[in-house]
Length: 232
Image (cartoon, rainbow, N blue to C red; front, side, top):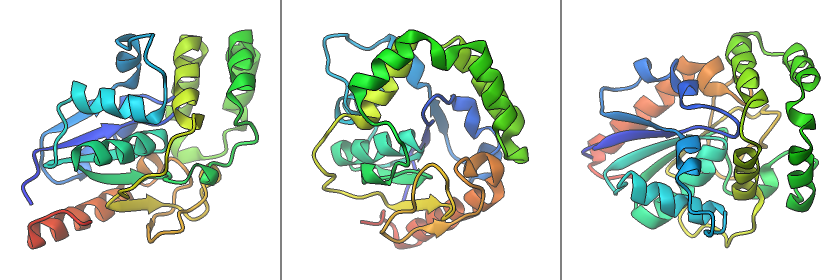
């Protein structure tokens, strides 16, 4: 299996830098960390937002093909799975899903999410301070606190765009990811019903346990090189 590129897609309200701890631990390859906020800023407002339309945009913008490997965390893995359907690329999901019912969210209705975000309450400095104080995982606390600072100044329209692509209804996937890496104790996304590699580290496993994630990815890539083709 000849790898053209490793492309990384970050999760909800996150940034490309979330992969900084993981990148140096992976096999040598040309890498690209996709910035979804840049894609949002280039988005045609008349195009409906679903994970399918976002995947089409990502596939075209980055010229993704079957020799590329996409590594997506959480929401990024959801996007990557749909890019695979369009391009035949290899997909590795980190703490992600192919069945939206796996998302542990008490609120899924976009007609309620939109006004809550537009009200400004989720970006209020008090709420940001509380979220920082309550975040329990020491290994990723500094990065999460920096991300929360960024959320405070994030364009609300971009926040809504992300929840639209997460919760908008789309047909079930016909092609599944090649590898799933998940912590069975993930408090955000329930483990998949399909086989997965269990890596401890809660939801942000690529930040809290980068060596464990890197080992799983490296073993997968080595296996594909031995057999000369991606898994199906």
